[in-house]
Length: 95
Image 1 (cartoon, rainbow, N blue to C red):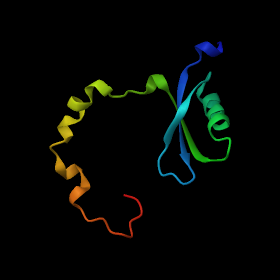
Image 2: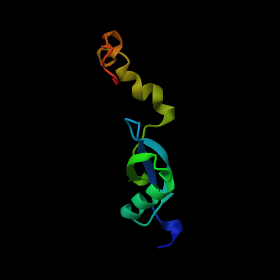
Image 3: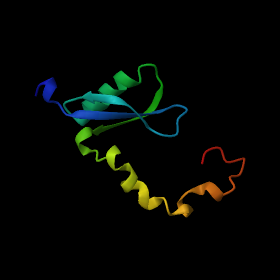
Image 4: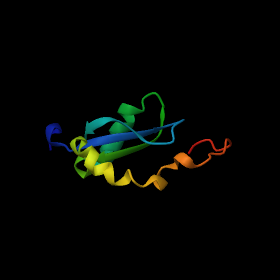
């Protein structure tokens, strides 16, 4: 299998101070294990990550930016889903 036919992987890294994994880029690799190793070498060279996810791009299903209004409109009328009227205690660091 040549490099041009290897599957595309999306790479997500959680930094030392981060709470979430953040998309940092993409790479091609022959298999999942090599994708993980290459992602480590490429995206955490300066010891900035504590966790890496690699996901085959073909396995990701995403909403279309063209459909953002109709796709997300059903949640607009459910105000109870948005914590805008709750008091957040000061001693809670991340909410």
